[in-house]
Length: 270
Length: 236
Image 1 (cartoon, rainbow over the protein chains, first blue to last red):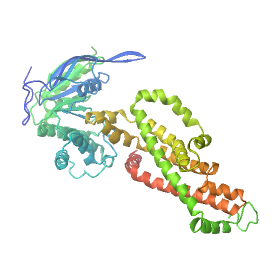
Image 2 (cartoon, rainbow over the protein chains, first blue to last red; image 1 turned 90 degrees about the vertical axis):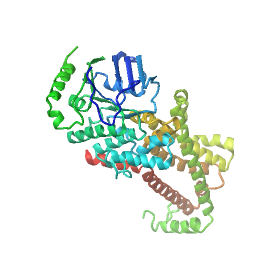
Image 3 (tube, rainbow over the protein chains, first blue to last red; image 1 turned 180 degrees about the vertical axis):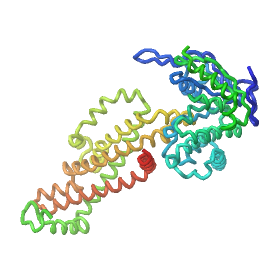
């Protein structure tokens, strides 16, 4: 294995991995029969690492993320978060869903959306106000606190969701195709934003996407899933230098080689 | 107007009805009937709203209770509420309690069923988000499920209000010694058709004002919902 790309300000993997999956499988049983969504998934994510999961649609990416979040138990194998089995959603995990319109609470202002997880954790009022302001500033939304999410553009709404997931300083941030519903330009901005905040907050990231360019651009490692039922085809170390740049990084010859390799893996029918 | 200058005994001229409105309902003895009707309505409706939302939420959170009770719920729901008047009379006699119980019981159903239905329809992504953010059960219910079901709960409350007004009148004219319903029946039986029509107009005014107040409260409680819908409408 080659050296993972080192990011300044992020402590690299020592000790227990943040995420550890061994032979994780998930089958849905219904009256119509059993459907295998994940067959056999094994990989670890080290502290501070940025891991992307790519695969064709139907590869069980979202199922994998839900297992990782503790939202549903795998039917076989074991999923560990910081060494402990995932039974429910642990306090140290933040999740950003694809559809911000469905995951933000439209009856709460931006501030109160971001504040809610802090309230739940019993953080004192002045500390909460400080942290909400800090995290909103980090995602570039310093002046929108009193607005409602639906008064903002799609890209800004997804920033609110990111801020809310980071407000309680999780160790692990899970993102399920978070930029799939915004336009290309906004998407590039949000990609750079997430690279910046993960260094600022020192958070480990698992990022699910179907976009291979996005995965290579962001990741230290890309986990490639096969077509359904999901198994890991290959784990690709991405050693492109950091900080990454939308133009320079994507023009790099190495970037093209990664793309060719991963696209080949995704397209191949195994 | 329809009865201007009318000589008919049954359709007295509007002028005399309006005069009766003033002499009876504003300055006269019918003020007491007006006050006691409003009291029955307010107390009965408040109890209906609280029980409807409370039982609806309880049934939502207890799946087994929901499955066990749903045939009974349906039976009680389809029962036309006025047929309960004799039963209520036997149980509670004539008086304040009987009327309030009857209004509360009959008006509870639309809110209860809409609450249950609204809560069952809450987007799964919102429930996942709630879990991810670490909301305990009670916070999930009060801060996510309840507001998410808000628009449907409010629709239920609106139907409940109509039912409550109907039951207010019905309970007063069946067996009662006070209230607008009692006044109307009493006037009709003593051939005071002017008084009867004035009572009917008072009821219409109560209905209009109650609905206006409801709309004001609704717009305050659901401003986020109408705001978000307006934005969607523009962008699509």
